[in-house]
Figure 1: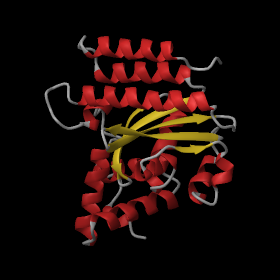
Figure 2: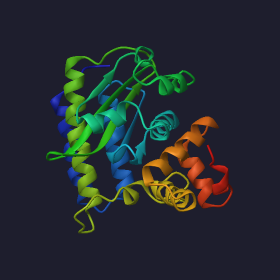
Figure 3: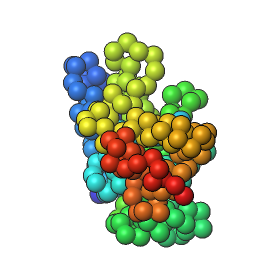
Length: 245
């Protein structure tokens, strides 16, 4: 694949500007932008999530099922490149995920079953504030070249602009990740996770952090994603009493 160039990025930026004024569906616009950028920087998949802290993440775009699973897995465990990119407010570049077993042992163990060998996570910014992350994965190990990293950073800036513009398109002043993600059946949205956390807080009389940790621990112990456990709790397919570690 050829190296990214300014013309390619500016072409997509211009297309985004036109889309933002045409009344297109926010998810379609975001998906189009992300897929176009995934063709510029050599990656097998990418995801975008809104987040201000590790316990509050909302997936708003995933290019494929692997990207979605990797993002939700990091949310379940509360660790990983995309989590650290937000916390550290800096890119987290992992050219060989196998070398990161000392940093994220549980995550690396889970990723061994997936076709993921390299991960590159970038914080999404609005001025000085970080409100999410962009993550690329590759099936083969290897570091991005310097010009590809530069392009990825510029891509992150454009996607951040897209998210903010789309999220505030109705005149609001704050980002609404659920509007961007689309509520659908709520199966994997953060509102279900928040509701389930509240249920555990009330039942066990514990603070929010402990309730989320309990839910994550149950999910990991049973080989499931936290979002799926939350869905089962909120739809009463799983009893609160069952989340007893």
